Every structure is written in structure tokens, then in C-alpha cells.
Length: 145
Image 1 (cartoon, one colour):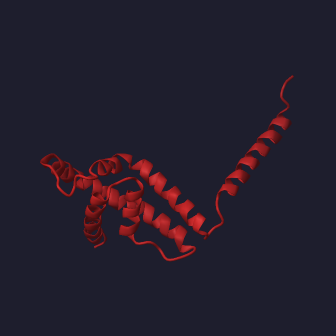
Image 2 (cartoon, rainbow, N blue to C red):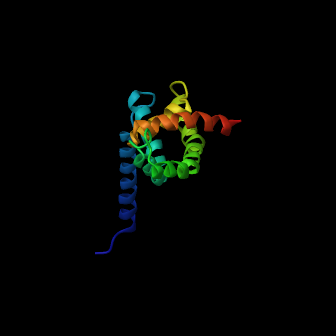
Image 3 (spheres, helix red, strand yellow):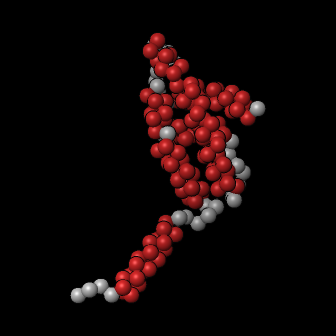
């Protein structure tokens, strides 16, 4: 029996409506702590996927920065440009998105705490985080000047 185009159109419309409705139901109420966390996770997850290689390189340095071998020192030096690009992209892409979302409810976030929080959530070690904080403040001052 052939499909009736009218029934197919109705079924497609119902499917699209139910999909849209379920997507709306999964988003928490705006300005609640759950919504801020949901929105932040969404922005940071997309950035983490787009920058997986650099984040993974930083993660691999964890535990080696305080007393680096010659090889680790070379790896750190080779990551400076990648780190600079990552920090600039975070400031250019992530910070405006976070600030726009969070400004609806509270004060905008500062770059370095947001960036180091992102790296911490991605599994980068505290020794690397401390290094990133120092370089991050310097890099952002130069970048914004």
C-alpha cells in the first residue's frame, strides 16, 4: 500500500514538534545554577573538542613542569605558540559566549579563572595550571594592549 503524502507530512511534523519539545525540556530554567552550569558546559565542551590536540599536549605535561627534563623543557617551548593561540581563541570565542550567557543573570567572568577552570576540568595538572596562570595574565595584557 503506497504512503499517503498527507500522512507522511503529518507524521514528519509531529516528529519534528516532539523533537523540538524534548530539546526545550532538557534545557534548565534560565538564571538557575543548573542553567549556568549547563550553558557553560555546552560552550566549554565545544571548545575542548575543537582544541583537543593542544589541551591533550598540556595534559601530558602534568607532573613534569616543576622539575622538567631537557625534553620536557623543549616540549614546553614548542607549545608556547599553540598555548598563545589557545588562550587567544578562548578569549575571543569562549569568553564572549560565557559572558553573554552569564550577563543575563550575574557579573561576567574574568579570563584567567575561566580559562584555568576549563583546563582543570579537562584534566590538566595543577603544575601546568600554575604555569598557565602566570603566562595567561602576561599574554592577555599584551594581547589586549
